[in-house]
Image (cartoon, rainbow, N blue to C red; front, side):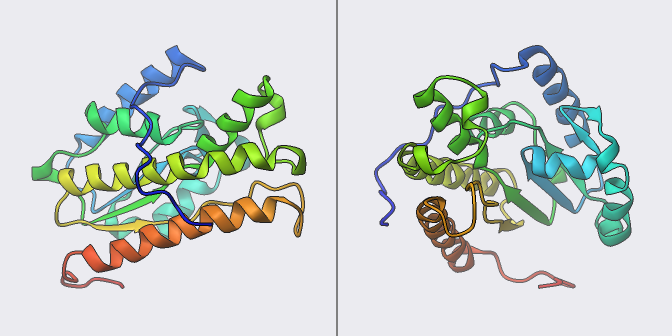
Length: 219
């Protein structure tokens, strides 16, 4: 499925669901972003926030060991997890535009980005009406999800562009989205193929535009 290049990204805005808790957490993450020393910033939604051991800044028992694992595997990079559950591309972009990323004189060497799955879920919810029906992509609403591919890819690309302005020398790692389909081999494969194609295109663009490898670059 070709990805349309003329589709604009979603307009940046704060989360409307859990708005008060979200804004409080976003402000707290902005404060963390101003702390010196991190060589690695992880941006994303609930999947990435889980590495903090939280969801919307509330501790979650199932993620108790997450922080220890991050420190064990990535501790030398002093990783900073700047992610919020439920974020779509437009919410992350809003945070980047409002202090949610280290200043250029304190920018990281690496940025890991995983965002977009909630854009898809929101597209399904909008068309089907109702929060619960859209949490995963079902065979019945796969057409709605395919409609979300182009704006989601545009949103991801816009975020990469913003990160490159905020941290021009950073290596940006763009991660693919996790599956949202009902079952392996179902209609959801159409969405996975389409979204995967878009992310793969972004990753190829990243390779061609990445800065020169830095000293001690693990890649």
